[in-house]
Image 1: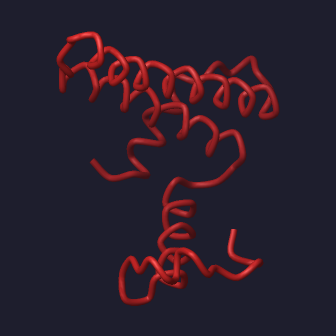
Image 2: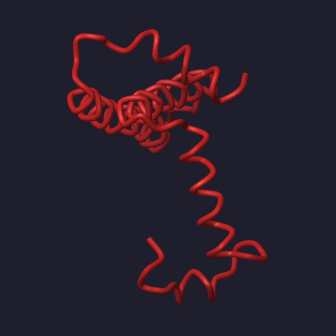
Image 3: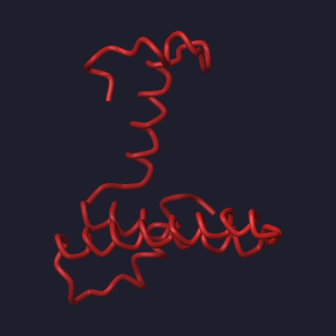
Length: 110
């Protein structure tokens, strides 16, 4: 599935009664909640539980939905955000990850 197709299909399930500002907040709260779910899956390994890969994939899918919702509410494409991130990483690590580059980033590098 292409990212743009995912974003368009996911947008079908966004509450149309919410404003973009409300949707951004909803997405933010949802992302935090899903991160908590993923955290819990790993936290339970210290109590003897095994990680269920299918459960983990479903929670990652839910996280992706909220990221998509935030992008849609902000009128951004996910491709735009993905490309910006790759451009930043290429600038930061032109030859791939390097510990020295990581430790000595410029102040403008956010």
